[in-house]
Image (cartoon, rainbow over all chains, first blue to last red; front, top):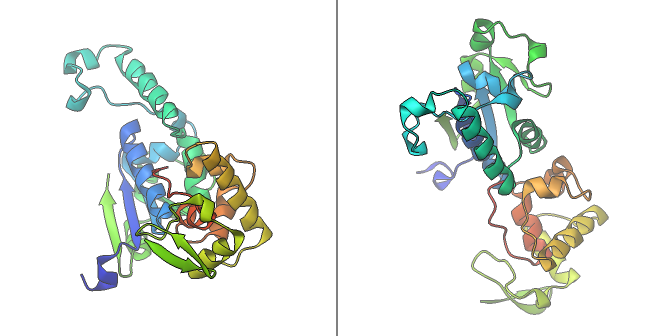
Length: 160
Length: 102
């Protein structure tokens, strides 16, 4: 606990999933860090890339299968329309508590000084091009580059 | 607890936020801003007045709302009040620290 008395200086958040609840968790953590004067960066990798994919970011869903906390039986969760229904309910609740949608949230993060990175390997894997991705992204980088970004005392890494 | 700011006695909580808005004066604001290494410009005052107005209307504050205020955008807000902007700006404005995650 010698470094800055254990104070958090920078949050490096890796987002590997694109279900609505995971994306919001990563975004709220990054934004909350900036609000406390803590630096924050997000690395979008694998399915997490969908949160910055222009054609997909407005159509992210809440997972209704394999999500026991939702209290929907797994078999029901897989029926047509159930995921859409759960998603629209979730979005309504989020709007109620003043939670921005994904695109507006990206703009807020960017304006707040959060650095946004796309994973090069995942971009190649999904055949995504730079122009498919959110315009204000800071760049497409490798894992090694991301670790370099996180160097320095007081940095914490988080995998979502 | 009581503390001295700009040669006047004011009540603050353990984090240094004024607990009685009636004790706030522009000089007190300057003194708090100084302690945060912020020099107040007319743009800062625009934001401070907006925040105080929202407080009087019992309207909860968030970064998203600041961005939609029409007074300041989020980028400038972070430039005016570096580090933790909402915390710093409300402290200078003499109003409670917002309990907001967004």
